Image (cartoon, rainbow, N blue to C red):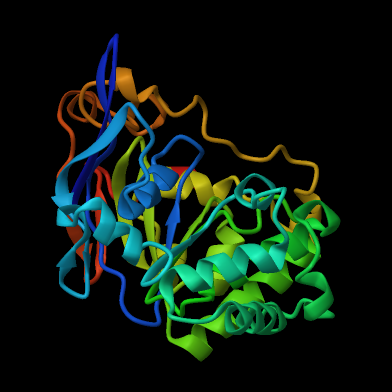
Length: 326
């Protein structure tokens, strides 16, 4: 993805929901896209899929899949590619699945759309995909409607549908947010196992840094529609350079595993003061400056360049690596 820009045109003016974001995703790799709600993560995914809702549209940049620019394709070509070479698991399966069609019927429809299979062969493929995502009694469950399945089962069905055409790229938008912790772990294990089996590249959108640490190889941190830091997972967790990344990590609850930890167990959780600014009214200079205790006059006047601060570790900050956030 190169310099992607997605703009919304409203009566009160236009604003960029995604502002010049670039990254690469390699075959078989998991890249995590992290940040608070409203930072542009989901809009980045919808831009890649060319599903940006009105009145928004992609106004610049390129999204290349194996060298082919998806933004240059006509709608018919994009429909043939969407759900085939590139698929997406949406955040809430109950709103993504059709409530009046059976689970098997929806997977069967997705399969027949992209593969030259008979109805009976597509039905067998749907059952096989449900078996692949470890849904018990897949032939029976294929005849169930979404409301007859638990949240975890619905999410498995969404994964089965997304992987039914063996896509090169899978975008997973908060795939475990609505699930309890035990089911979350099962879904993540399932996704990683299928990724290794099928060689799929995964773009994982999440706000859960624990999930990132367990599943991703690289991380992109977004704030207010912009990329503020990128690094390998180990580098980012060992040495976060941007104050926003440090704030996200400091706000994660920690288990007490030593006497010193127990003495601090009653301490208040750290937080990043303030909220993500409205994209239609961003501040001058660094957009994180109003929430950053290290911000100075230069931060408030000039947006910092996005630079490689350490080998393979990029950030946009005038004060990279300050230890203020813990």
